[in-house]
Amino acid sequence: MATLDGLPPLRDVIQRHGLDAKKALGQNFLLDLNLTQKIARSAGSLEGVTVFEVGPGPGGLTRAILSLGAKKVIAVERDSRCLPALAEIGEYYPGRLEVIEGDALKTDFVALTAEKADGGPVKIIANLPYNVGTQLLINWLLPADGKWPPFWESLTLMFQKEVGLRIVADQDDDHYGRLGVLAGWCTDAHMVFDVPPQAFTPPPKVTSTVVHLMPRTNPLPCEVSKLERITHAAFGQRRKMLRQSLKPVGGEALLNKAGIDPQRRAETLSVEEFVTLANCL
Ligand code: SAM
Image (cartoon, rainbow, N blue to C red):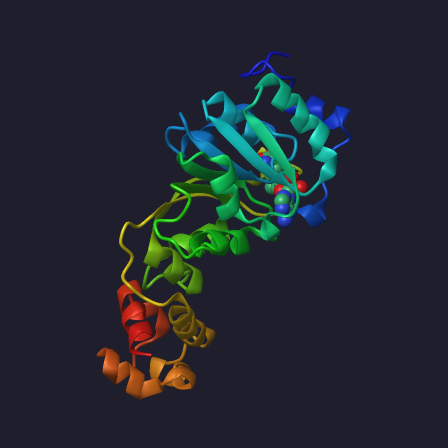
């Protein structure tokens, strides 16, 4: 059967290479190239862009990114069984796909940028393994070199919908918490579209969603470690008034210094108010 890009259908690739999905690796594959192209397109133009992909698996999203004109894809994959299937894609797009076998959580993406991107733009696009997705996002929001704007121009990432809602949540939203404050402080984040379980092989139990994040040019000045101490305390007891939940970090005195009513609850505070509190610590 003909495919959009002329490579064999993903179902055949998976069968030929014996890539039965492993739950422990968060393997839920996307086989529809129309869908993977839709995800890749939500990252904007890929012309001249070096794309980092985490977990290419059999390569459905990788193929979409390459077919849409990315200069290069650097893909980090933990499962060595996927490498022969990915090598076939690399042959089809000579010099444009590099696969690194390894754990993305231990990968130094700042160093990879310096090594591989030749000073050009970098975007990250991935259908993330559900068990490490949030940690990877936090690592990208707090890059090891501390530089902002960061090494990436945008993040286009698939999460379980529940996680996506937490990333884009704003004050007065039940999903608002530590992740929403961190993402809201340093990025503009929005959900692009949902993907139903049956789009994946095997289907996960829950709906997924694609989230797009762009770095804010000038996040309000703030020490992240302080912001995290505040949000950790505030959302650790989110139903309590702040004068109670913030006791370990200064309680009522801190709130008065920041000019914030001690009777309010964590989820009613804007990102700016959390930053003010962190700066008063
Ligand atoms: N990109 C493929 C797709 O969309 O069909 C596969 C996505 S699947 C949800 C997640 C992929 O991440 C799997 O291929 C899995 O082997 C890989 N993976 C899991 N944990 C990883 C880690 N820590 N580092 C790198 N890759 C990982």
